[in-house]
Image (cartoon, rainbow, N blue to C red):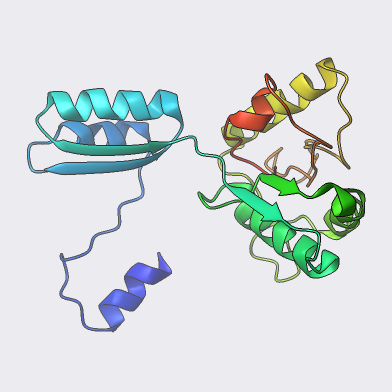
Length: 204
């Protein structure tokens, strides 16, 4: 929203760029309204298929980018602590819900244990809280329904008997009514684990 304000302050004529906050009902209108000529969507595969089929059926140009996993490659000569801090920033910034969040790291074996230990140390230090508090480092997942995929992944990891990191991703009781999930990490991933190849919109 601040970006929209900055564009107006910079002199962009009103109506050239419009920002509309919307729920599902409003989004459906955008998919079918005759004055909307194109649709671009980023999100889950299930929603992407719906967006594509409905918008395309109404003669619109459509692009849907769905469920990608972003990867980092860490080589043995990387500075451990600096690298771990950057991974933490990417994985947990914006509660892990931004499209460029970093949920997967490929690490050379000689430094793997040290990197994982440093990641765990830094993850435990993250301060959870509401976004309006300056000291908050890991904010809420919005809306509360966004926490369900992460919690489902947590249950799947537990069912498989895999090691889970600190609080991965434990639902917290707070004044934000379950919107806060603590930071965490699975110790390793391999097929057919869903957490290794499906996008998790949360602190992962």
